[in-house]
Image (cartoon, rainbow, N blue to C red; front, side, top):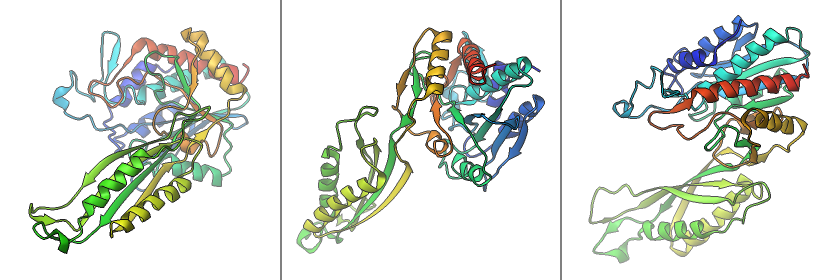
Length: 380
């Protein structure tokens, strides 16, 4: 049986799987995989559906990882089509998830179906780890499935995460690592009072402004061989005060740091806490801080499989892809705990946008790339 990447992409987009809602996307994918011989296991944690599907039993095990959940469509009236009724216009497939990343999943499944038709007795196994919790808080998806697979002693020898890695053209970029992500929720506690009597109060906003200025001016590093410089951005400032003549008792801010391999989340926490402690004390305030680490920085050292994939992409696209660590976080931060991995998928220009779309021609090329990667990996 030969699966069409365009048809499967359309079928997946029709499932309105806005994270963490599944809407039947995982079952649809499992049905298609079973039709070409995969054994499928649903691994569900709380309200999140996950799938681990495998073709074959032997080593090596080549894995594809991805997600069927999508971000909300936003104002549907701004779309030129219904975001969950996929439409092809001017050689582009339009729909929520077309770019990030249902179409990439469809390309891999189509590639596997073609590979199996031509190589019925290949030596090894092919697996897919698909989650419904990548666009959300990412607690009950790939993170927990990886722990489950490790407990079951399931071996994965190499993994491609199918995120849209290319900035403008298919073939431009492979991701071999990512910066870490640390979010801080800071509260400065002063003393509430009347604005006409500031000596009887202690305005926490004064300390908060000084602290935010200080941490924004911190020079964490100049970047490393494989990573761009670490960067901190303040994302929220809030003073919950409904009266204009009252000095508030507390002030809050949220910030995020994307950090490279010069740091760990622990080392950054220590550095930041020293600033909070010093400036809050000098302003006679107290502070509370809550941190959330969505992932540490990591780098998958390129090996022969990495270079094989790089050369395969060049053969199809005519472009030698750059090995990069740019961008945000992805489920590769969990997959790297169980196998060497890299990320390669479609062009990411329209991901999360109104009229998210992908080139139909790119779908065909990506299927060819994934097929040749399997062929080269298993030496068939």
